[in-house]
Image 1 (cartoon, rainbow, N blue to C red):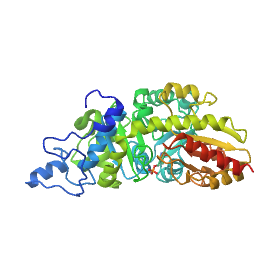
Image 2 (cartoon, helix red, strand yellow):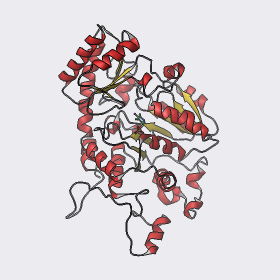
Image 3 (tube, rainbow, N blue to C red):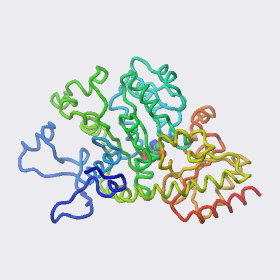
Image 4 (cartoon, rainbow, N blue to C red):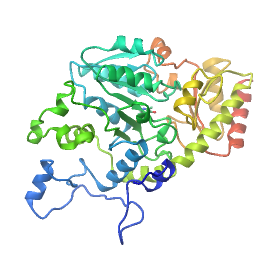
Length: 426
Ligand SMILES: *Cc1c(COP(=O)(O)O)cnc(C)c1O
């Protein structure tokens, strides 16, 4: 794709139909692809030729969406997965195995926290959680000889901490390991973490990238910039005997990481996206830039209103000058952060419950980053498994209400919030 701007890439990247082909990306609902000779098929299996042969490893619809997201993030390649969880897991497993260690910001999505804290630990990968506001020295102190990656969210769900990506990248690179960034909330429209030193970007495409709440999915994007040849990543730089000795860095150059994620992990774990879901995700992506602009405009209005309502005890929105992350947001998220606003009501948990039950238009759902305004109480849902101390460390106080501001008319959103606050404060 030419040097198009992001809003153009949303529409055109990834699929360029030729003469007589469908103008709109078709759904290739086929598990398999035919070849004239078994030799051709064999070459595909040996990674000696490029082409589709089985949808677990690649599919034309999914491929087009992967190319679009890679273009949006400024990476060399991407791989869609069945969910954001699968993307986070595979992004780590691709370079970190039993007996190794990773450093992770404590301000992350509850599902990712459980995945790393429990499941990775059970698989023999140790995780050190560090405060999201750690300095370079503090991050360095958390590193070990066997550390293989650093993980953080650009804008954390639901605590809305803006991570100092350059500091995290510097700490990771000083150790000779990559920085993996979950960029789900800002989307590449508002932030491209690779420009700030991230090496790998992951998303839950279930959220804004789709935006319509019609599919669960994830994606991993490879910046192509990390030098794997420093002795720490033999799985990328030494022969893979399960592919007749292919060496990923030699065969795939800067796309070695994402090639291995597909050829090795997707082959073995099978958490692939469905063609239909990729089609739906692509429809969502076409309007991503427009939607993000409106989400941010609406959220800024809502945050400003909440801040001035005496019945609200606190508001956190990176776009408010009062936010402790405002300066970082101006640097990393100059176009806006996202549609998500976190706040607490005077009256704590009980007031939060009444407020949520009184909403008429906004729905109470286990979802976020949808074009419909929705609301959730993390401490009793997504973060239910966390102890009081873990909640504190994740920046999720028990009274936190996560309001995901949609793209409806801002006057209607505000009116709904006001009437619900009135009822909750009675
Ligand atoms: C939702 C979410 C995930 C998990 O994604 P799923 O698609 O639900 O598996 C990961 N990271 C963040 C920031 C999320 O909001």
